[in-house]
Image (cartoon, rainbow, N blue to C red):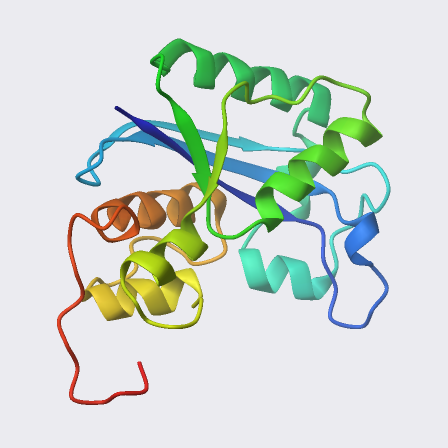
Length: 190
């Protein structure tokens, strides 16, 4: 069985000028991975936003995505079709896709509706963040960077970049699936 790991970056602000309902995808990162966390295939696509086409300084600083990256990118309909083709090309009958939390699934639904296109992934979603917390018995859900730290991994690439975060989530698959377990810490407040 393989897992499609998806991580999205979206328009954002630190001053409330872009609400959650008005966020739009600006980068799709995805990879197919084995249960052992081996990355098998990679996908990355910038997306041109329509509602808030100018990235905020906060968004550019957080993601490292430039205005040029999104200005020269295709609209969501084209990006979604490319993601669909990537997902279908490498899928197997038991395929599932996962993301760190519920945000990515909700944002894909929101953008698919906004652009009136079919949802780009045809198989079930799993919440890797929730699975990690449950299978590692840590009591609460943690961010992806914290999960990597708990697993003893350094982050690869740049945090808050779609493909880099998808690869880091893929590396956590043995812990997400419960095949590997965190080393017990002397500090009970993990």
